[in-house]
Image (cartoon, rainbow, N blue to C red; front, side, top):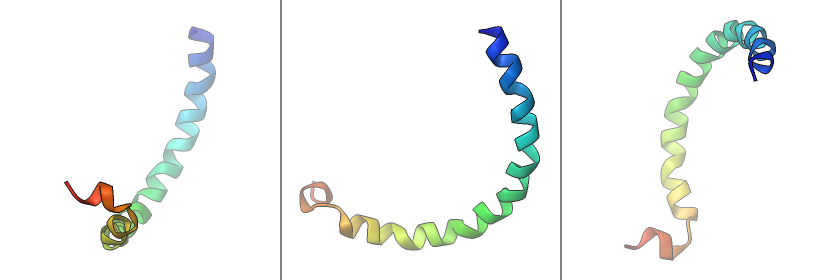
Length: 51
């Protein structure tokens, strides 16, 4: 188990800068996600949208 952890850890550190680079894009897409939320509810079957 520890061997797997040692192998995965360096890869996680390599990907960390990329995660920070993508963070601003995630915030830019956030408003669009909220805009699409009502459409998602419209696409749900009627039995889900009605209590």
